[in-house]
Figure 1 (cartoon, rainbow, N blue to C red):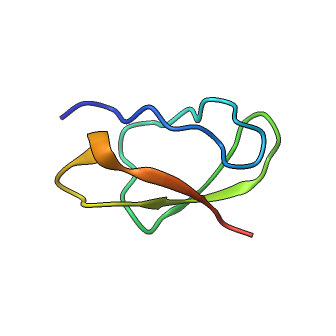
Figure 2 (cartoon, one colour):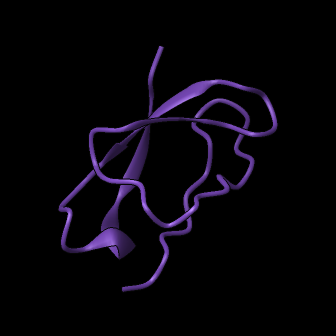
Length: 54
């Protein structure tokens, strides 16, 4: 499985993911600190999206 290339919906910085994240989890942008929720099919991380978690 590849690691998704996602951007923060607030500041558009690339999100740094560890690789063990799952859809529905909240992660935080390492640049602006905004909460971001991962959305998508767990079996297809290349098509995940990042949504504003505020």
